[in-house]
Image (cartoon, rainbow, N blue to C red; front, side, top):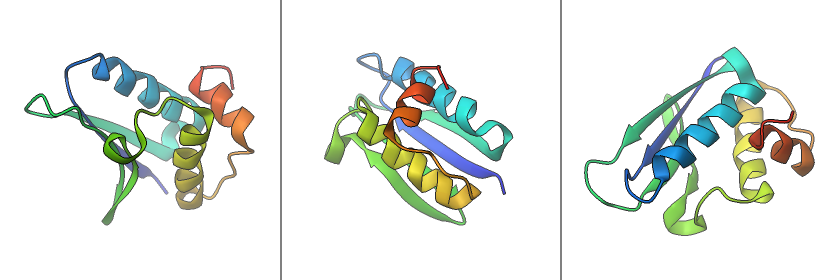
Length: 104
């Protein structure tokens, strides 16, 4: 099953780079099991929302509530939600951090 992850980000404050980093980590970990799309918010909103879109939309992360995806725990929560959809196991926080940093 291919899972669609959609990331909505504000174009200001380096958020496009944060989007690219997260997109890369997801694609590295899941390969062709995910399709990662992005959308720059039309205004300077400060948004950084990570959604899983497969029929229903499930918000996996919201900067408004949780800040940036800037820790192992935040990345692991995203990976865990995707794991449930694709039927794999993230293997814990250190593996999530390795994938986010391009190491595993």
